[in-house]
Image 1: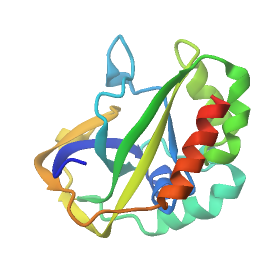
Image 2 (image 1 turned 90 degrees about the horizontal axis):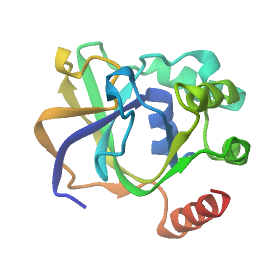
Image 3 (image 1 turned 180 degrees about the horizontal axis):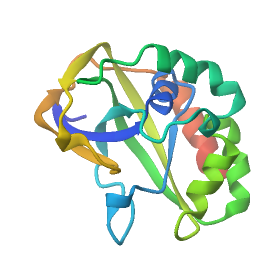
Length: 187
């Protein structure tokens, strides 16, 4: 693990919360409009999670994740602050082009079927399934919001690196290894 990192990955706050709680160990991604002609790529193997509410809607998450969404909405930081607490190591990146396999992932993420389907079919059919190991700080770090972070893009860089000291994995080694193994078999 890097000692510090200035790279952050923008993801819906509710998904960040699911990752931080250990409920989810994968990220389903297609990319934003600023990703360029080639679309989304996992450009970094380690990064901070950057929670955002941009495009996050109630019908974007599965019915059983609605309480998590409501919890996230009630504890949003002020608009001028970004709270960073979770760090990710990428275990594997699988580009999924077999639509029939999407339903086998349903109990591994909190997104609604409608959202997954829309992401899969956006522009060209396919989706990145990013298997991750999530670590957490005991308390969040506050970073001032900046226009530099705006826009529909996956990756942003902080003005200065954020130290990774004090991180703890959200899942035990055993649980994490079992989950990643199960996901790899499905994919």
